[in-house]
Image (cartoon, rainbow, N blue to C red; front, side, top):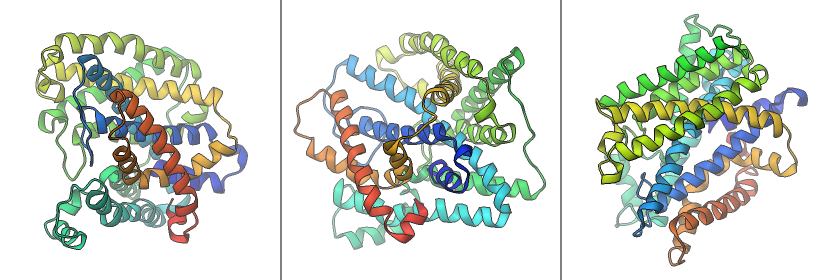
Amino acid sequence: MSAIAESVSVARTAAPSDRLLYIDNIRWTMIVLVLSMHACVTYSPFGSWYYRDRSAMSFGTTLSFAVYQSVLQAFFMALLFFIAGYFAAASYDRKGAGRFVRDRLFRLGLPTLVFMLLIGPATGYFVSQSWGKGGFAHQWLRHVGDGEILSATGPMWFCAALLIFSIAYAGLRRCGLTESKISTGDDYRSDLAVAAFVVTMAVATFLVRLVFPGGSAVLNMQLANFSQYILAFAAGLFAYRGSWLTQIPDRLCARWGFGAIALGAPLFVALVLFGGAMEGKIAAYSGGFNWVSAGICLWESLTCVGVSLGLIALYRRFFDWQGAIARWMSANAFGVYLIHPPILIGIALLLHGVEFAPPAKAAILTALTALATFLVAAPLLRRAPLLRAIV
């Protein structure tokens, strides 16, 4: 995502001492987790993807996928929106409205179109073979003609959503609105502010899911999660004004990181034991006016904020540096995100006959896909002038 593209752009123009190397490291780590999520969706009963390789699995295996995917979904995309918001504010300040929007259209809109018109269709027709018969050109024209191409963003839904957020932000700035500077500290007032943010996110998510339950998509966007994403992006804007990424106290971040585990784990267990999952009744987890949906929304919000703050403290303290490999991964992370679907599916097809437990196959698929996509992205995408400018 754009957090990747923008932070790379900022890093190239900033003095070395100004670079947030730990944010670069968080960013490529989240991209690897995106690969992991799509590898899990390939084998687990949860989520949608171009290619599925399901097999019978025990309740324990199903539960392990549910826990892992739920935790990832709760924070990793929101954290990328937060980072993107931080760099969006910095970019607007440097470029102004016109140049900022043109840059967003180029860096977000163009790669999304490349995926929608080329990479996604090629993946669906040639790799996963989910586009039907009659020839690629025939199927491509049919999907364009009936409007299905508008929902063909695949994982690039993130860039499409971020483009919308960025244009809306530019509009607000043109109207004279800007973020106020909010300072953070290691005190009860900051804890209360974080708690209020968690509750706000939980309530907003609960209300949205009354209309758009989890699993329902509009133009390939899971609106059930967009309260979280919008709030995370907005938090990134305020984070830039308050220099949170350099000044937010480690103790505050760590307190909420551990708190998310200490409070979230028993809440999640209670939701599994008493919410209907043990009997196979899972509809309430997706939304509706019920205590299960409210509990899930609270757990997701607590996990989102707590894990994100915990990772910021962890990476800032221990991973605010880069060797040659980390720099290489940072430089190619957006390219990996753009091209990974056909490569992941191709490797999954090769692994189809391998007799391993589904979680083990998902881990192997993640590792092989990460290796292959980084190796492809580096020489192929970054040496083509136009693609290099995008990624």
